Image 1 (tube, rainbow, N blue to C red):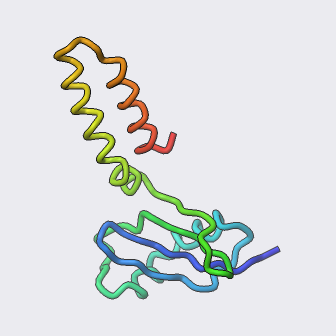
Image 2: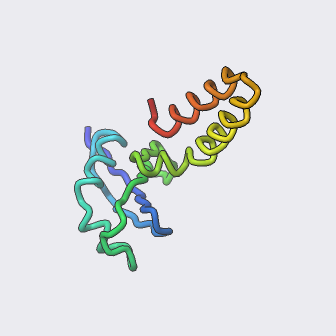
Length: 117
């Protein structure tokens, strides 16, 4: 059964736009449809001119509540950047002391966050 979703999309610049009444069966499908409509996203965003990719999406139900948030690779890496930097600093620090186990776990956790794997 088809439902109606509102999809919010962000790009690396501080712009947000809305696609109202995206008809889909699931929030995942609604976001997939929005990704295939970059011209509609550009029309709705005042200053975003296509040089910045839309890489963060949220599907909201009819009540306005967020059902699903999806981040593309660049957005996941930006979100994980503080953890990645901290893990790298920890490697440098632990290397000097010869104890890399904790640093390796921090690196693994930061990479997992950045790659969603």
